[in-house]
Length: 54
Image (cartoon, rainbow, N blue to C red; front, side, top):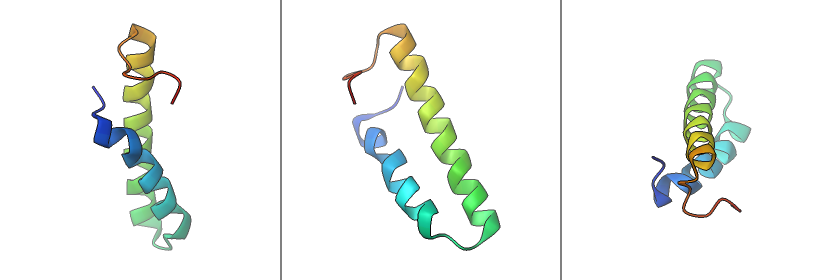
């Protein structure tokens, strides 16, 4: 389950990714963004998201 802090984490990671120049670091950041968003998607599908409108 994505924690409330994790809810904004993906946005922070997107900002970081937008300025990252190292391809390996960028790949790791994008992988983490993907993991968080997939987790959030599953929560929404199950109706467990604290605020699905976010």
